[in-house]
Image (cartoon, rainbow, N blue to C red; front, side, top):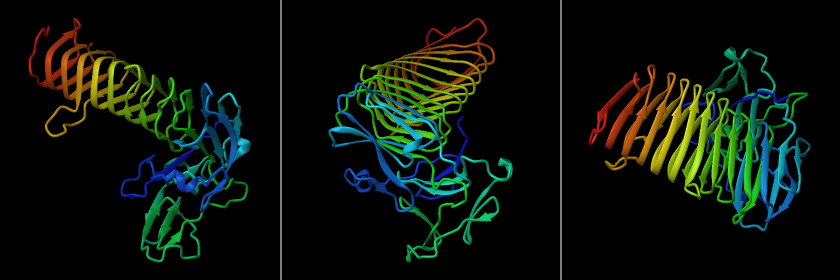
Length: 394
């Protein structure tokens, strides 16, 4: 059974805003990966090699429960998997990487070999109820659930005053915060790293259920199938392969650049999932949102887009203008809205926009629209603030 965990992932850029999950800067892979030897973090456990697989492995099948996950490409001739708790993993030479157990971590501070600082309730329930468990960062120290967090006696950063943080840890007046060392608990959260050759062409089938940070630099191999259901944000730099993406059960996925290799893809967000694509370029896209879910397409160029929304889900197309130009360019766009769903088409250039709505739904349209059509005997609320042309509206 998977243990629930709650962590605050703090960014080295500051903690003015404390978010449930925020990606901390990674240490450069070449600095932390010392050749083929096990790597040791300044605070955490050794990252021991779990398995090696050939370059020609047809697919990677990765099943993650709850771990600090990092997948990166580098100049190498094989695939290598590393983890801090080898006994928590099952790996096979055919590409299987499966997490079978979760570290038992009490509330506290944990710094991982992937360069992340984690401060939170851990994988073992806190002594206080969740609504009473709070984290306070003050000039006198960091308090968790009213208890002051321990720091090292040694002065590690003499020049540091107040609160400071980087890829080596978290500091108060130059003293590094100590990981929790409670009897019966593990020393740190599960951490895994997968190193891939830059020219790997196999497929990726990945299932993610965790609350900890997860990051991939890019994926340009074969078909990329993602099922994201963990509440820790899954961050991907770029996908330019055939892709099928599902975000479920409150999962959070962010892709900074999305360019499907075959120029068509299917994406889905449901049951509280949040899917954000910062920049999209493809000829055809089909997407669905259900339940209290959300899909954001912020910028880019899409030839044909068909979207279906139900429940109380939201679809948001476009996000602000760059130098006075529309952020998102769409050729043919069809939106089918049901239940109490909502769609926003903001700062978009659309050649042909068709909205099918029902009572209880809402659509907000603002941009350059060449052709606009609505359908439905009893339409929902459709608000058009600005359009270039308005043709065929019923």
